[in-house]
Image (cartoon, rainbow, N blue to C red; front, top):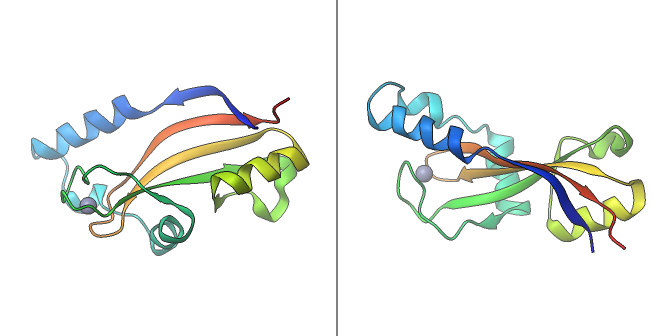
Length: 121
Ligand SMILES: [Zn+2]
């Protein structure tokens, strides 16, 4: 099994941004700006977040993992399912993972956590 290490939460920044939006300090267009690729990737490689979208309150919120790493080649900066990440890490070593939440309805998106997945054992 692979394990996540050096995890950094970005949930505080998320909360602050949502608060600014609710107070009218930032407009919805500027926080609901997921591009086509991110929305599609969240549908095919992501998972239901099982909580309501904080902006449109739809049940359309998903979480998706993006991987980065020098040894990944073309696979760097792509969305991957967890079981794929485990396989890739066993092959190339530690991989940086960004967990992002994306709403497929209103296109809200935010980074939740960053971390490194390392080979287990
Ligand atoms: Zn939404």
